[in-house]
Length: 87
Image (tube, rainbow, N blue to C red; front, top):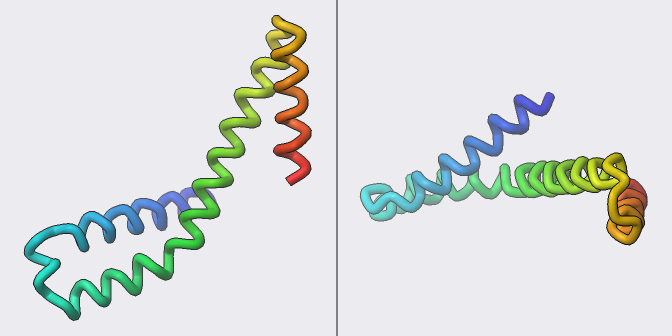
């Protein structure tokens, strides 16, 4: 499933680059078509990126907790884990 979403993210980025090309910018119909497709992917890509960001933050916080070093840092990491999992 994530492979499909990653492919959508790549397409979204490709569309952005394509719209920025000078030779495309002069073709109004092409820009409109690209912008429509780009816009249709925006919410999905945004949600996927946020999920990925939260997943990375959660992984880092769990790593801090498992290291068991500085008690204050561990407490902050545990709080971040709880907040991230709560939603």
